[in-house]
Length: 285
Image (tube, rainbow, N blue to C red):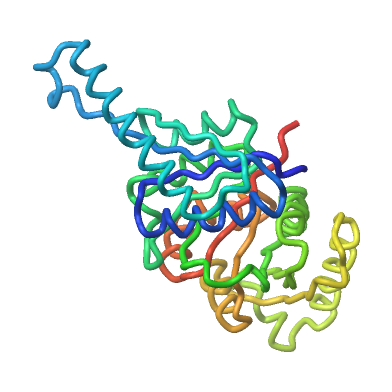
């Protein structure tokens, strides 16, 4: 997949500035077009029933013009070397972001996130699972100030085709990084890692070798790691121990990894981890 259209969703927060910086860097590296999007939240019916349609339209156009100027001002701080489109839409944030990405053939969505718990309430918040469920393109969630490159990247794998896609896309985005391919064995089977199943562990190691060999990547840049435990906790522990700059995984697959974003595991991962995350959905047929 070529990376030629990148969508940055902004709410003008601190984390949106972080995500914009990441987006500009990626756009420059891949010579991609940058789409800069802001969503105006529509007021509830009770809040505007006293106004006419004409008044509401005028108010929307005034807000849109004001926000467009603000977006242009933001992006000028970072780069003048990339082609940029600025758009302001109204509606439910997750729906509009996903729709815009699809209509404009964007290859990636980048959005800011709170570093301690949920993704920014305005852009994603409680709509994060909806956004990931419906998005056909990878989503990069930026939690930290981008004072560093993504040099060390953990990719969680379950040997699925979705996982293979995540590996290849992540490598495509950041070919100069060092990668660790992490396979997590369910907590109920961790006895294998305690000396009760050396042959099984070797078998998984061989499977990792074979699986990586089928991926269109430079295998010399990959390390392999097998761990046992709860999915979210184990990813966080290993990302901190290995000092990872980015965590990447497929949105669906052959194991509990598919619940990373849409279920309680996602909430725990977002709560525990302060590391940026790249979520890669299945390829569209």
